[in-house]
Length: 102
Length: 306
Image (tube, rainbow over all chains, first blue to last red; front, side, top):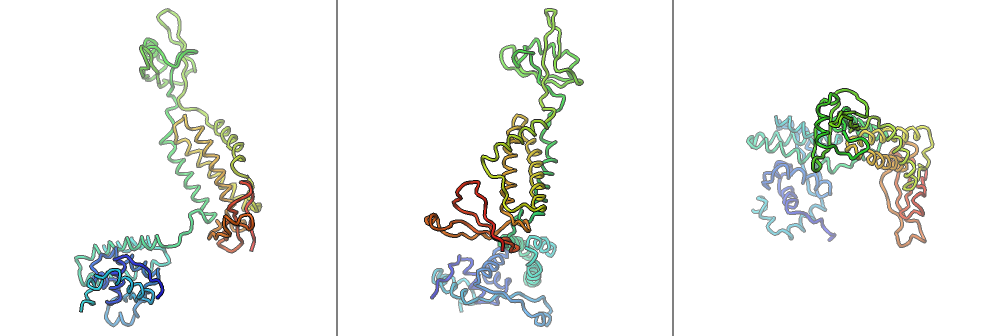
C-alpha cells in the first residue's frame, strides 16, 4: 500500500464524517460538532491535497426541493487510504462519527 | 445581516473563486437558518477564516512583478513619505540655539537673563548644564542677524550667535549625499543592467530611480535632523542598488519580474558543471540564468531569449 497522507485528528474526523455522512459542509458540522470556521477551511485543504473532491448538486434536484443547490464532497482513493491509516492512528475516530456506531 | 457578512468575507477570497465560494456559503446558510437559526450568526462568522484560508492558499503574484504596479507602489510610498514629512520634521524655522560668540556653546545665567529681556526673542528657555551655565533655545521675534549684541554690566556688549535648529536649505546636502552615494555604489554592485537598453526599459529604470530617490528623500526627513545626512546617504545607496538589481531581474521585453526559479547543478560539482538557478519570464520571452557561484559580484546575469 502506498504511503497515505498523515492527517491531524480534526482533518481525519472531517474526512470520516464525509465518508460516513451526506458529504456537504453543514452535515459535517452536525456530525463532528466542529464550528464552521474549522470545517470549511479544512474541506478546502483536503480538496487541495486531493483527499476529497467537490461537486455541485444539479440545479433541477435543488429546484424540486425548493432550496439552493448544495456542494457535495466525496472522498477520493488517496483520501480513503489516508482515512484508513488515520483509523489505525486514532482508534477512537470510529466512535466520534455517529453513523459508524451502529 | 449574515448575508452582508458573507458578502464582506467574499472580498477576501481570490476573485476567480469568489462566485463559487459565495454560492456554497449561501446554500449552507440557507440550511443552517432552517435547522438552527440561533447559530446562524456564529456560522456566518466562520466564513472569514474560510475566506482567509483560500486567500493564503492562492498563488500570489509578487506585488512588484508588473512594471506598472511597481511604479504605482513606489509612487504611493513616495507620496506617503511626502505627506508624513511635515508632521515629523521641521522645527519652527525661527527656533535657534543661542551661544556665546567664539566661546563655549553655553551661556551664563546672567547672560541668559540679559537675553530674556532682549526684544530680539519672542520666547526663550534655559536648560542648566553646570554651575551658573546652561544651553539656551529661543524663538526669534523677527528674522534677525546671525549675531545678537546684548549690553552687559560692564558697560560693553556681549556677542551671541543664533544658530537655526532646522537647516534652511537641504538641497546642497542632498546633492552632496547623492554624489557620495554614486561614488560608493560601484564598490558594492555593478551599474550594468544587462539587455535593458531599449527606450522603454531605460524609461522604466529612470522612473523607478526617480520615485525611489524621491521616497528616500522624503523618508529621510522623518529622521532627526542630525541623522538626515546619514539617512540620505544610506537610503540613496540602497534605493539605487535595489533599482538596478530589480531591473536585472526583469524580462527585457515585457519588464515583468522573472519567476519560477529552478536550481541546476550542485555546489560540489561547481568546477565541472554550471551551478545556479534559472528564472523564466511569465510571458515566455526568455530565461535568466543566475549563477550560484559568480566569478565576481560584477558578473552580468545571462539572459537566454526563447
